[in-house]
Length: 154
Ligand SMILES: [Zn+2]
Image 1 (cartoon, rainbow, N blue to C red):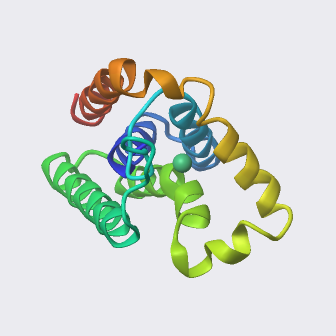
Image 2 (cartoon, rainbow, N blue to C red):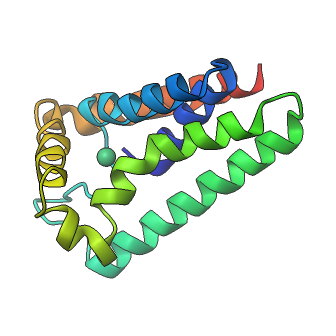
């Protein structure tokens, strides 16, 4: 899924659970749950072809920057939130994609165990519901964004 989905849900977990190990564990787990659900993201093929490398990583970088700005805005609008837990939740929820989908080091993390095994699992969970990526995926991603924002702002 796009970073916005992962970061907002991780932030929402951090905003609602007052326990650092639980926030980290649940946020990392949430990454795999969201990637298992049908979705579109920068890696989605259009007419059987991936986006061009530069466009794909430009959109991914923009996605991470926009997500980070939204978290900062939420934290300034809601000073009562534990900002460390929200940031740790948001970061932990995105961590899997940062480890395996950043071109600078993915050549190592995709080859060296135990990273390779986690990467294979991460890739495999994208497949079962791929055919519903547009019909179910896009509405579902919007619902996840709204639900996460509500959990952060309530
Ligand atoms: Zn992922």
